[in-house]
Length: 301
Image (cartoon, rainbow, N blue to C red; front, side, top):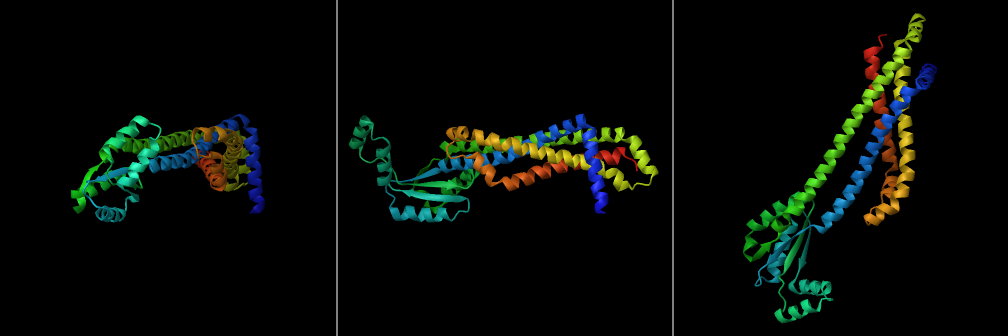
């Protein structure tokens, strides 16, 4: 069994080298597909980081009437905190709101002078962060229908609704585009590998006839062609890895300068095991799958 397997691998490698032109084409398209899948994995991690950063800055504020006392507002905070969609709730008193405003605009004397004349114009509020952008509308409706609605002056969700919806659309669009591109290149990889194996079968027709005459098993005849697809997938995976490591290392400072806190190279190294497994599964599965289809259709043994 082991001897037979070694021979199948050996003849698969010989066949791969014999059909160099078509084998290179197969490796190239598999390389593109594996690279795309790797890029999507990295992009998904990077986009999750960026979206989380944006979501940290996206919230809605609930402002309370001037007459509302702190105890009532804290009761609302306690109720809101129990909502599953709510990630974080922060209470900001009138005094704290004034302090933050002064800190932000301390270098604007005209504004500070106006503030001195009008006193403290700010209302106590709750800043609410949801787990997902699409959950803000549900939270807003809860607040509008709560028994505490009488002490609420306004909810600024509808002012921020457009920005929140855009964030949701961008996220969904990125994911859909990536999946669509992966499917297209996977189909191309299957088609090209399929044609490569078909050509290899055609070129080896005399050899296959001799193998049949000497009583070679179906498995022994088919095996090398399947191995060729697997070899192409492994080579594509290794090349992809060798391309991504130095490229991401080189781009690391440039990406960090544009997007503070985003370390793509560190993400790649941290998830290296997962990425290599993903690359191998993608490359080998596509190579083996398309080879199996070609063998089934064109190799009658």
